[in-house]
Length: 164
DNA sequence: GCCAACGTTGGC
DNA sequence: GCCAACGTTGGC
Image 1: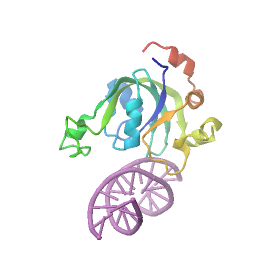
Image 2: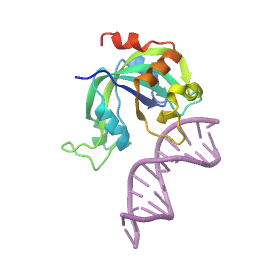
Image 3: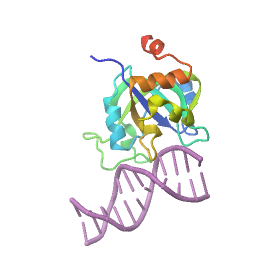
Image 4: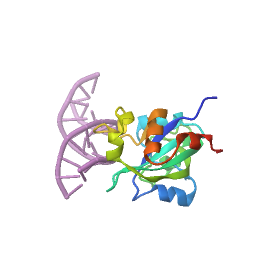
């Protein structure tokens, strides 16, 4: 048993935004097709918290907080020949790709933009703000999490103390 | 829409 | 195993 860990999940809001997650209530985080990102998914535990980052959009930034509600299991799209995420090298016996389920916790009081993230000293070493970064799943330290939430008008202490 | 960065593919 | 070609990501 260990404590809650923190992550950042990228999503293109034109495809699936934090508001969409709030509307649907829970969502399988499928379609991750990068080994490093997949390995981070596999490290996640139920109860972990994730910053929900809007990428590839006019106003990139952290929009909300999500919670992992199911640990990693095989991404079903890898078996679906009609899906762009189909992977012919995967089999049911040896699935290559994983997904977790996430649920919304709450939106930030306001979007914390990429420019603001870059300006936070606690995030100086955070991969997201380094040039050329493309990973869609990133680990976040407690100090980084706290800084982003604070900038967004939320308290990490209050979120962690909440019942799941 | 441009393009730099970067991961993957596949010929050799 | 090298590495050029290619596809994708994502900020701008």
